[in-house]
Image 1 (cartoon, one colour):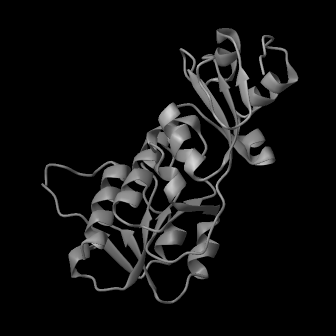
Image 2 (image 1 turned 90 degrees about the vertical axis):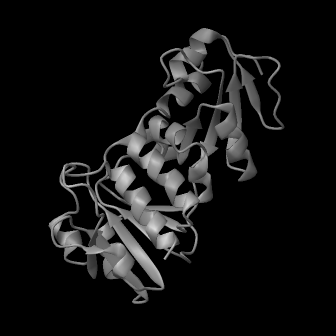
Length: 239
């Protein structure tokens, strides 16, 4: 199907999906990269495709549009080549190690953390309801398609941790009083990473069974949240 007017109702609807409130309302989000679309297709979450290239062919409803429309619905300054409308991810049963993010705000950090979680065999990612939106376009791009491989849940993490199965060791981070993670013994863990500036909230810290730190050069006071998360997940995975 060919669309040429930016005032078309379909175009207006796609543009709404650039905003979180409409993504939440319709349980849909936009994917702006052929590689990411290819990953999403494996999970059968693509509903329709929008493209400026008539040579692009998918076995899904495809809309061919002009540059003006594409720039209107794309989150990228120069516009995108192809965009897909996808259903938000379904949650599944939690089986393995869990990463819990307490008020993480930077979309690039979340995207990087998602990639590391998949790389280091974490089953589930729990996002606090105050964290950056999973379907923020920058998060989707930064995750490089790995978000489709994870079980991701957004919720009140206080409630989640309070009701977590007792077989899980809840581990937080503390550069002053923490232990070396290599000294801990556990079968399953829920690893908590805090806000980029303020760390783990007091309420969440009180629910942690153990606190850990990453040994490093004394000239470096702290690490980026995604770097810290990646190192700790690596250590858990190689325990």
